[in-house]
Image (cartoon, rainbow, N blue to C red; front, side, top):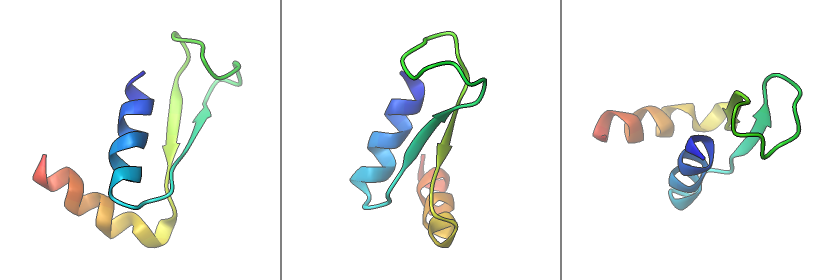
Length: 53
C-alpha cells in the first residue's frame, strides 16, 4: 500500500514508476518488501519532490 502511494505521487508528477517485490513474493502480499523504481534520468526530479514533502 505504501509503495502504491509513492507510485501514484511520482506518476502524478509525470515520472514513470515500477513496483517490484524485493523478496520474490507475488505482488499484493502486504508483508512483502517492495522497491519503487524510477528512471535514473529522473532522479533529480524525485529529489526535488522529496525535498518539498
